[in-house]
Amino acid sequence: MIEKSNMTIIGGTRGLGKWIAEHLKNDFNITITSRNETSGKEIAKELDVMYNSNNIDAVKDADIILFCVPIVFMVDTIKEVAPHASEGSLLMDVASIKTEAAEALDKYAPENVEIMPCHPMFGPRVPTLERQIIVLTPFENRSNKWLGRIKDYLTKANCEIVITTPQEHDKYMSIVQGLTHFSFIALASTIRKLNINVKESRNFSSPIYSLMLDMASRIVYQNPYLYYSIQKNNKETENARKALIKESIYLSNLIEEGDEEDFVKNIVKSAQHLDEREEALIRSDKAISMTSQKANILTKSIGKEIGIFQSYSKETHVGTVEKVTSKNVILNTGDEKVTMAISNIDILSDSELYEWKKNNLKLEHHNLNVLLPSGCDEKYLIQMFTHIDPVISAEIINTNINDSKTEYTFHYTLFDEKDKAYVEEYVKGIGGEIQ
Image (cartoon, rainbow, N blue to C red; front, side):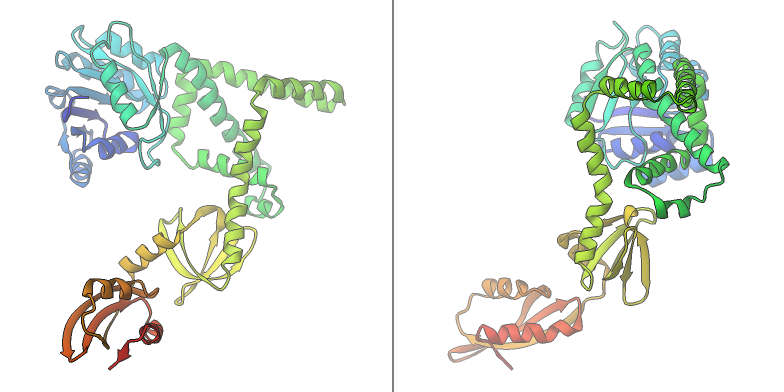
């Protein structure tokens, strides 16, 4: 990839477009566009990238033009902008449905411009490109210059690259996205119409039910317009939905008719078709056991200080673990008792807790005069002092030599005033005379 190429992101103020601008700005000179000039300028300032309110003007010097608008506007936006792309530039889109966008790019981009429809298989919640799947659907003889460069860039970012055709992409997406989304949306809708108290149902939940409910919630909490677009615009998804509904009715009829044999045969055949039984069990076991593992760690930490990061609120709480149930942990921070769902937290490691306290707590500052043999190497004295467990930092601020001994004045910091006595006992224990 050419270093610091110019990239224009059409629709770069929200969602995946904004994520791309934020995470690729160190590698490209990025310009974002938006129909709302006020918010566009604000986002550009926030991300430290350039903004242009005019799509046509924004692409005149662009090496790469990335279309990140909603699916329903994708074809019209490509039709508007693509003819103005500079010779030798690359046009890409990030739509989750590829056939229509790919055909639009092929139709409206000048012959001296390359095109490469793509689909990042992740949303704007992921922290980095690393280990993310990117699907590329290059056109024959229309990406000769850029395909190798894009692959090299993504490979260096540790992405997993899948190369296919737009048609094949949409066929698999009708299952990977379309059928999956539709199943969970239908499940959530059914629970609602059955008037089930979801919070109460969790009291009876098995690990599988909890995991399923979390996945359904994850789907319905996000952009419903995007899910409708995926269902409506990918023609292959209609076939998948109809097949699911037909199969559901068939299986339901088997149960109502008491046909155990055919019902069981159906499950056995499905298990054989899905394959990867052991791998699937291992992956699902890990997902199910994550909450249990955290509960076990928290239970062993009752009465001890730990740090907890709450995924939903993005807040870190530090305190003493007071109580642990199968679903919640109660943390006493000293100022209040915080109840958190175990499924929504991460437990800080010792080093992470140390750094958080170092950056967020008011430190206790102390001076200590210690008489030690003259000739001690001050570098090693400071190392010794900072290795005392409660000590955060230490320095020697004064020395006073008296014959065979020297009085050293240490300035040191602690998290807690009560640790001052421990530090003094430690220094006495190694032969220091406190003055």
